[in-house]
Length: 341
Image 1 (cartoon, rainbow, N blue to C red):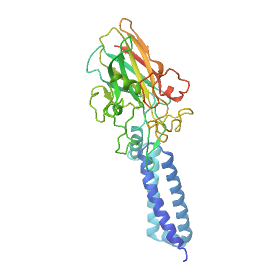
Image 2: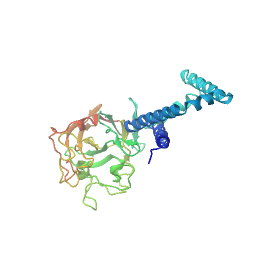
Image 3: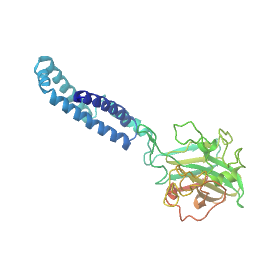
Image 4: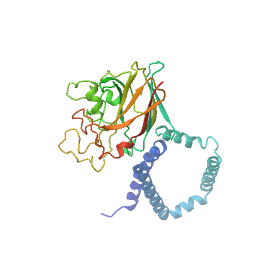
């Protein structure tokens, strides 16, 4: 059977056009993705090759179209249309730049600009409470994780903040990120399956309450226990306003953990027999625990100090002080500051 080149080129150009259409919309409305941009480039190359092939084989017909009155008029109208649009974009005139700026706004809506920070007010309107400022570090967000059709997402940390007395006894939780508060983790954001994550913040989990029905030291699925003490993880720097504390001296502790932060020691296959530390999952380096001492008789701020890490799969609530194998997890947060207002 003789190969019909015209048919092949037509089909290839049709598919390439659909890829250009989808990838163009994604590049217009979402943050830059290497996969999406690569598809767009290769689809463009296929279209250019196809158009070149059609011009080569239909050059006489093309020039004949341009030689008649209607063809000339169409060509002139196209040029006249390109000129004002180009001029409007160059000199920043509406409505020519409005479409471009709308796309920029869509893309920037999901990104974090340097200097931005979120305010999370859980003080209940009380004065004289606590403020905790968390400065996002270099590895606060994970590298983009693929979803489908060029879409990706970045993971942000799970965080819990709580009070202990001077003897180290747990007093109460002040803040916990939303997904951990009701165990709403999923393997990927678009998947319906809910998974339990005892390795997320095991030090807080073992100290804050007893085990759940399944024996894990994490809140039950759909729990409302921490309503009023929870919020979604901010995308970058954030200031937490927390309720007033009555004790004169106490400790504020913070546990932080983020997925997809594997390193040379905490590699994907470090604990292949561990049912929680999944070899193909997203566990990585264990949670880090920070502490700050508060004395209400002394004005000023207290800086959180790194005091250890939790168990890599949440098997216990011990504090491990050996930090030699911890690398990028130390820069999930740059620093944290707590102040009695």
